[in-house]
Amino acid sequence: MLDAAEKTPAVINPKIFARGLNVFYGKKQAVFDVDLDVIDRSVTSLIGPSGCGKSTFLRCLNRMNDTITSCSVNGSIIFDGQEIAEYDPVYLRSRIGMVFQKPNPFPKSIYDNVAYGPRIHGMVRNKGELDDLVEDALRKGAMWDEVKDRLDSVGTGLSGGQQQRLCIARAIATKPEVLLMDEPCSALDPIATAQIEELIHELRKNFCVIIVTHSMQQAARVSENTAFFHLGNLVEFGATQKIFTNPDDPRTESYITGRIG
Amino acid sequence: MEKHIVSQFDSDLEAIQAHILKMGGLVEMAISEAMRAFVQKDTELAQSVRAQDSAIDALEELINEDAARVIALRAPTAVDLRIILSVIKVSANLERIGDYAKNLAKRTGVLIQMNEIEDASNALRRLAREVELMLKDALDAYVQRDVALAEDIISRDNDVDQMYNGLFRQFITFMMEDPRNITGCMHLHFMAKNIERMGDHVTSIAEQVIFIVTGELPSEPRDKADETSSFKA
Image 1: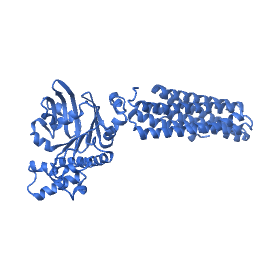
Image 2 (image 1 turned 90 degrees about the vertical axis):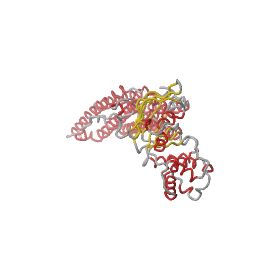
Image 3 (image 1 turned 45 degrees about the horizontal axis):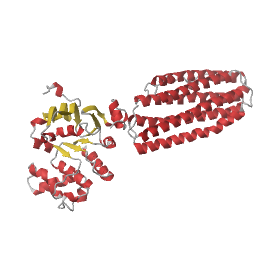
Image 4 (image 1 turned 60 degrees about the horizontal axis):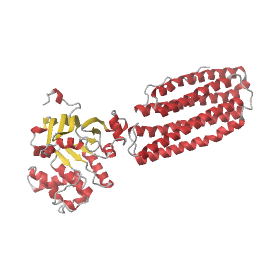
């Protein structure tokens, strides 16, 4: 465990931050001693080549790696001033929502997809409240107008881009504070991608968004801050504009200019 | 520098920079031939310098088109982006220098028909020689990404400004001595001013070298050694 001084964040009031984070899959170390501060109400993107540890790092933030038996994590992640290990994982994931690479709506109605989280967390007392919450989440997910007349249709019947926005609405419905997105647009066409990016732009007003993306242009477009991972190390972290115009580390420069894979 | 994974990207960047060097070569030649025409009173050569300016202009257009294409197709970042931004600026600087050389040739055509003004042509030739050397070094610094040389060029522009100040005073003296010198001296003064302005554009090219390498333009404001705008005759 780190002492209190080492847990002091480098930026003012980060929503979530990591100190000395190491992750192992069996004996193989995937993430090496990462310190990272994520600011609230902003978008932070994690970039880097395949296998660089960015997704592994992201999955640590809401303890998704707990579900992998060979995976062990040490170091410290502080969310709202408290070690995430001290949270109940189900409660933690209601406050740190996640959206995955492939849209994965439940084989239920659009309404039930969004209502699922609030129901299991006992967030509403009656149908009226639940209706309001579903509408609010679908509005924040930028798809209310598209689906308000067919809330009973099955979520898996939507187009890929709509499914992904439904998954974002579903993640929003539990009123999380942090949204983790693991390559949310990689299975989508450019139009649906643009809609998700527009949505991410809106989400930053209410959420702390952390996005893993293979598209560097996407990172450049949507995020305020960018972290570059390489071979499990956090190589460089800073303002997106600086990373993409004049990065400090030659490895970052090589990666973003397309010189190393 | 490491190669891009997409080798065509490297070819694009190399091609566009090769155009810059070709353009630089033409501009160097334009200055040197314009001055040779001036010294040797060669009307034909002066005319040919004026005619060749269109080749310089065409290269600038080509470079701008290529730069736009690379931005659209390859979305350059970091050093690649700085290279593309720099070629747009450097080609504009070279195009301006080319225009000044053309103007030297134009005035040479007029001056040939007048009485020669003593010493002025030698001083003007020294000034042009200095700027020509600065341009050659700036193009070398551009190719070699040589920040030290670029900084040296920027400091040498002060010498050019000083030389121009000297010429300015000299011309005023000539004009006061003999009003028949006024027309000639006015043309010579425009030529000197054109050469001094070339030096400013060369300095801007040197600044682009620093920008490519460091990502920042030199921040210190340069001392302005051209004081003729506040000169009291």
